[in-house]
View 1 (cartoon, rainbow, N blue to C red):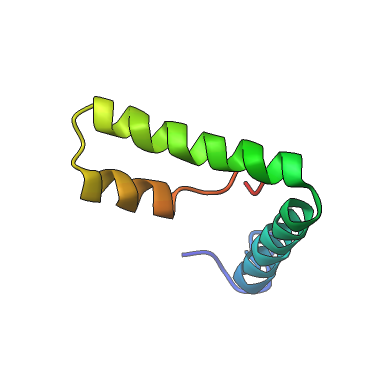
View 2 (tube, rainbow, N blue to C red):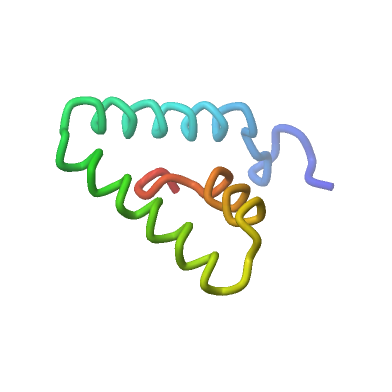
Amino acid sequence: MLPRGGAEHVDIVGAMRASVDGLAAYMQGLAGNKKIAEAHARYIRSLYEALLKADFTPEEALQIVASAPLPGTR
């Protein structure tokens, strides 16, 4: 376990806030740019179809796609 307040202290709340802020910025970019939104939709569809080809069930593929991070948010 890491000591609190030391150089090794990890700011979990700050990291989560940055992640949410990045996601919000990404979603705003999608809303304002139809080409990006369409490209993202094609990416999601191709991922889902690839998972089906790899013998995942439709339910498993949907769960994976729904839980996958959005491009540009990592």
